[in-house]
Each structure stands twice: as C-alpha cells, then as structure tokens.
Image (tube, rainbow, N blue to C red; front, top):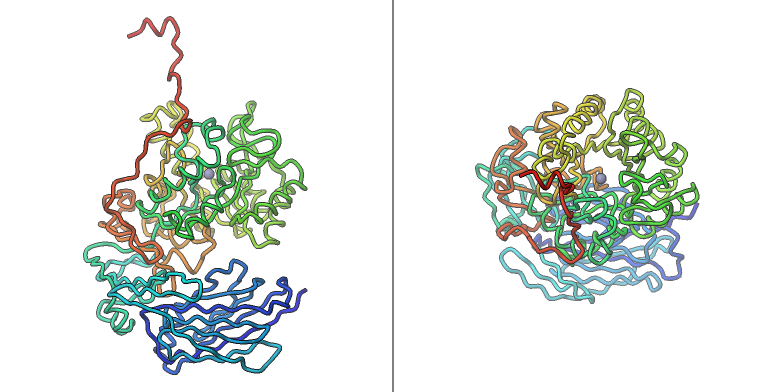
Length: 602
Ligand SMILES: [Zn+2]
C-alpha cells in the first residue's frame, strides 16, 4: 500500500464571470516518486451562494489527466487522486490558470477577470505558498469568448446555447416536459421551465447564448450506440474485413465514416474491437479535434482462442489478424489483456463463442477459468470486460467470470439468466443486425431463405432479455453498425424499435436504454445520456415524438439539431460519399455459378 499525500488549493473567485472558463493546473513535487498517488482537493471559497452554484456545477476533472480518479464532489469542493506529475481541471467561470510548483511551493495564478486570489498548501508542509498573478488576453464576442490560455497558448472557445421551449425527454424514463436548457461548452448548466430559466442562469450568460428555438420539437440526449464497429467500413464479407483493410486504409476510412454517426444523432459510441487495434488512436484523434466524430469508448482487438470466432478458418492459429488477437494459454490471455490496456483500451473484449464446420450455430470456445483470468487481470487495472456470447452456456460463464457487458446473450436459458442477474452485468442484445437480415437481407442479396433463422434467434432471446429487464439488468442498445447490412448513420436507432416490438418495452423505456443505460458502455454513468444539470452537453432536437413512435429517430430528415460536446453539428451538408479506394472492397465474380444449363436459361 502506497502512502497518500494531499495537496489542497483554495481559490477565491472575487469576480465571477460566466463568460469564460477556468483551468487550474496542479503540479506535484518533482522529487516525489510518480507512483505515489496524490489527492488534490479544490475548494471554492466564493462569498455568495449564487457564485458557488455558478462555479461548482461546471467543475470538471481531469482536463488532461487520464490517471485521475474523481473521488468526491461536494457543493463547494471536488477532490481526486492521481499518479500524474500534474493534474488540471476546468471550471467554466472566470479565466484562471493556477499552478502549484511544489519544489518551491509557489502558486502561479493567471486570471481574467483579475480579482482572483488564492492560498495554497501542500501537505505535509503546512505553510501557505507565495502567489503571483498575471493577466492574459481575452476577447469576447456575443456567443464566444476566445482566451489565450497560459504559456501553451491553447485556444479555448466558450459556446453558450439556450434551447428554448422544447419538449424534453430527459433520458431517465420520465415523461416529456416543456423545459429550457442552457449549456456552456460541454456542460448542461440549467434545465428549467422557460419562465424560470432567467433565475437559474446568470443574465450575462443568457445574453451571450445562441438561441435554438425548439418549439413543437422534442429535445433529448444524444443517442449512444453501445455496440458499433467503426473501423470495419460497412464490409460485405469476412474476407474483405480481414484481408482488405491495411492499417492506414482502415484509419483513413474510419475518419471518413465517423461524422456519419454525428449526422445521425449519435453523439457517443462504444466499439468493442477494432481492425489492427486502432481504436484508441481513433478515439484520441477525435478527442484532440483532429477528426470529427462522436465520443468513443473503445476496445483494442477481440481476444479469440484458436477455435476462432464467427470468421472460422480466416482466424489464424496464433497471432493477430484484423480485429482478432488469438490467445492460446492463460498466460497469453493475461499478457494480451495487459498489453491492450497499456495501449489505451477502454474495454477488453472476449469472443466467447465461435463457429466450427461440424456444429450448427455458435459454440462456447472459452472456458470459465480462461474468461475469469482475463476479467481478473482487466479489473485489477480498472478496465471492464465485454464478451460476444451467442449461446446460453457462454452467457452463463461470462457472467460468472465477471464480464461487465454481455453482447448478444443469444438463446439465454434460465441458468444463464440467473447468472446474469446475480452478476450485475449489463446486456446489449444487438438485435438490429439480425432484424435487418431477416427483414431486408433479401433486398441486398443476403440471408436469402434464412429469414426464419434470424427471426428465431431474436424470438428465442427476447423473452429472457425481457425477464432480465424486469429483474433490473441494464439493457443496452447497440446496432452492430460496420457491416454492409448495418452501414454507418442508418441503423443506430433501430434497436429501440426492435425493443418495443420484440421485448415489449414502451418507446420511453427503449429511449432510456439508448441514452441513460448506454452510458454504462461509455463508462460515463452520471455524465452522459441524461439531460440534467451537470451532464455533458450532447443533445438532439427532433421533429416528432419518439416517446410515441420511436421509429422517428431512424429518420435523419427529422433531426433538426445535433449538439455534440456543447457545439452544434453542421447538418446542412451532403451525406458523405466517396468512390471506392483500390483494394478496399471485394467484388464478387458472380452471384451464381454459370453452368452450361444456367447459360441456357433466360
Ligand atoms: Zn459486434
């Protein structure tokens, strides 16, 4: 057990301006080993209660500290623990940059407005640190404040949105109510009836807001897709997926496809396994603003045993191909899990079932102990595990092993259901792929004659999913977009329709699955998927009433606004299209075999 040291900073925001945001950066003593976690506490000492409420709800940590864990958040303070050399957090009031440089224990404050003052102390040394203060340049236009920030000259713009008179479905399952919503950058700062919004938000903030008139429209959280393969590029075959996606091509095409999700109202997605393991880099490029896309939680590559997964003998006996990493011993399972976490995976994925030529349907291809080894390793490093389970026994064993999110959970039996309920795992059935095959497959030359099989899998699974839902198991909405049958931007909302039709949820319950529940897949429960003060500013405005007919969410022409991270997405642009890149797609020579007899037919 390592010792915990604490640094406490208190800041007095004498002049609170909601037009701008603060970043506070804390740097630890360079002589202190970085392995020792430090707990930072930030406490607001503002005099007036309204100033406190202006600042505190918008405090967000860590700004750039991936090692930080948020521990406590009170009405006037926030504390977290980190192993990083420095840690920073952002408030959206006042422009203040403050650093604690521990070797000299000096505190530097950069502030605009300038009347901020501070005292800091770093335990175990109790005396207050010296203070310096510098002005920085700030220019403020009607809706955007542009601030040159600190010595790194990072440009931070402040966007304030005021969505008026909308019918708000908040994502919690509550019935729609008329509300105004105000966001400042990536945070919802107020949700209130129109007549009361002026009381909830400082007049300064309201004055500079861009107004979005939502009268007659429905406002709801941005959709989250809890099962999406954004590096696959609408593939038509496993051959194409595994052998026609060199890493650079996969990355470029992924960047091309990502905006389609935003244009369809999807502001977050979970991608459990990615071609060549590029997911973390894609996520980081989106977060850095290098490419446009929704928030991403991602795995690296799926772990498969040598039996393989759904791609049969295209999976090698060992090594990696496409989205697959073959692991043959418990030692390899543990090592690969650790490596994937090192490379930035948010999730570890186990491909628990696979197809073999002598068996109809998918078979469990991992033992309970093997899955447990992966779960124990990942959990010890604070990373959750998801598993592709298309059989009853695999679902049961995945739940028993500690898998956090079960994908498909097909053909669950009573034993599997009980294990899932007991384990606390979430379930993402991902019916959309099967439903598309069953309902529309014939239109694109797929699944001909198999309609009953796919319908059958949905029917066989739906009853137990309903039982799981009734027992309180979080049911998540995923589309499995990334295949020719589930191209990006078209089917992310269909799972809700299937939930209504097949498991008997109300449209409002289905919406909660795709918003609040899906925050589990993003590892952002309490931050995403709900419209409430303090949540992130991912919001869509829809012409229609999805709580009456959830299918309206599939119709992109009804999307009036998509707000991602507090910024409106430009919907007035053509749908992204491109020609085929060399080698990208695998054309078939023919749909049928050209026998002599076939040639004679008309
Ligand atoms: Zn999948």
